[in-house]
Image (cartoon, rainbow, N blue to C red):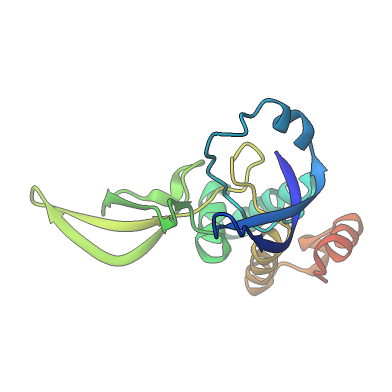
Length: 189
């Protein structure tokens, strides 16, 4: 994979087609290019590059969820699911939010690696009530679509506000080291 800055396109006088131009700014483009056939068509998927979040931010989010869980007496998985449901990012597949249908009596907040945001939509199938959920992206480093710096900032900021609402003190919410990391990397005080 490589990163590039888009440049002003040109139009071919011979074909009338647009010729895209880009300046490679990082990655292994030469190695990739050497293995390509110039006369085949390729599909390009362009998306804006964002700095990846730090491992410290991921760890801090999980520690903060444990502190909230201890204070209100539920599992850290439940807290993590609630925070991701409120402040996280949707799982997008082929340009659309991924929806799941789950029996309504199932408590989806107890699952460690599945993060679902409930909707108001329900349906009855075979005499049982089912709810429609939007699937949320997880925050573990093993996830394919890791949160970038901005997305992680939103998640942590929301989680901090929830921690304050339940009465956790500043000292309980974050150490001096965590505070410095959040201020420098994410602009969170």
